[in-house]
Each structure stands twice: as C-alpha cells, then as structure tokens.
Length: 103
View: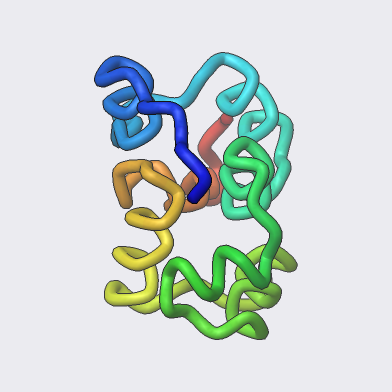
C-alpha cells in the first residue's frame, strides 16, 4: 500500500481558491489582445482536452472559443469558469470600443 503525504490545509485552500481578479501577467496578455480563454487555460497549465473533460464543454467548442469564432453559452461559461477556478466574468472577452470611441 502506497502512503500519500498529507496535503497541508493552506496548500489545499490555495489550490481550490477561485480567482476574483487576474494576475498582472494575465491582465497584460489580455490587454495586448491575446484570447481570454487561451490565456486563462495556459495560466492553469491545462490542455484543451483536459479542460473539456473538467468543464463538460466539448473540445471542439473550446477550440472555437480560443480561435475567436464563437462565444460560450452561459452554461458553458459556468463550466469553464469552474474548471479554471475563476469568476465567469473574467472569461468574457474585453468589449470592443464603439464607433467614434477611443480605447
């Protein structure tokens, strides 16, 4: 029988914590125009297929989100947010400026 080392309560809480704000690195990448879904997935060191399994969202849909060809439905967004441990609002792409507005 293999004995597993017991995880500290602090480490477990940190691993399960839901992020309410992006780190500076994530915020900078998103501000520079990188895809929000890809940035958060890479921040969590998760492959697309693993994210699909954890979130219940089809792999092909995740690929479309990362390419910018589709946006998730609310239930897909909730599943992705839970799998990535972030608030759903953080997965929404930045709003495009309206005509005549400056960024």
